[in-house]
Image 1 (tube, rainbow, N blue to C red):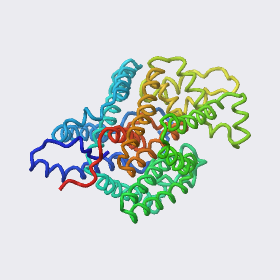
Image 2: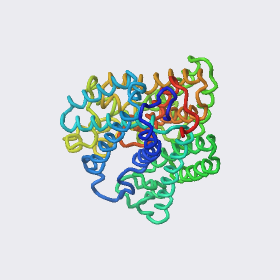
Image 3: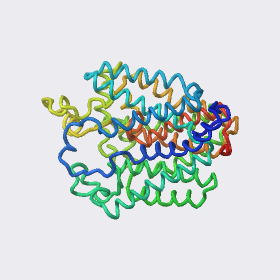
Image 4: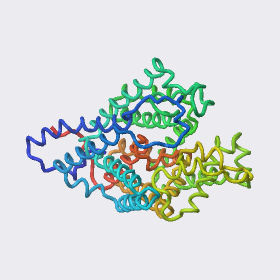
Length: 445
């Protein structure tokens, strides 16, 4: 996520001076585009929220390809080796498979467009890794973007409460009334972003900007608590503890066990409770809501639909909220029937691993797991042996672990405009670079 000593560019002196000025500006633009988006403050009282999902936002369709072109041109001009340095075969293979599954989906033209936009977003993250010239410069831009997010969120709560706090007037999920969401569409999105800001604040404080870092941690923590995003609240201390253990582990096998065993256990305990049986009974002994607020219906539906299309899946966005699904003839009622609210109101699996299988088939899920779990584990082990910038390594590690576990209860992975997925991509690519190159400690003058 920062310039590596092995990645020094070959630009002429004047161009190099200009590039040093442009780099932090581009970093900030990328962060603001993904963290705030072009459509903040969502009205959740419209009847259209309960209808079929519509196409993308026109501003996104223009801005993201433009940002991609600018970053690609800048990277090729200043650091052409960067593309080769960040390329990892599992990610490239997954992106190719992603495009294939979207082309063979029910709507090839729309599917290809969605696939290309996802590839563009993933490539932007890979290019953004090489923009900052040092961890300190990266921390500075993170701090500016974090304060921008927090000011907008708190200002929204104070001055635009109808657009920043869930209310009883919401078309969907009226039971969330009173939960803060800021300029985000949902309190869970706001909560997840606050976790990213907490980890960013810790990194900023560790780099040396203590007052700014701890102010970000404090403000983001308060907003997280008032969002009542239970998954994110619970995962903050869990992630910090697990990341500390993984960071100190010296054995690669032990490091993998620390991450994978609780991750597998969590998915078995959650998805496994989708049907009556011993797993649901055990979960019911521990939790008051063994349905995980209705997620078990979504998980069961996702597994059934994946079984119907196990190789190529449904392409990006899956079968959710399509006219064909929402308005097809209802099936006869069955025990624990899921043909009602899930088909009419479900928008995703609320589990990134199930959603990946649903969208890209079993082969796509396998490629994704290799790319987002195996490769980062391997790279972090190599970076640890190099003792390569501990503060930056810990930041990437926390982001990565948080995303892996929140992905068990939310659809985060391969979510084009999701800021948490974008930061996970930057962390994964950043660890890939940390495993190969020493970090430039100071800005070049």
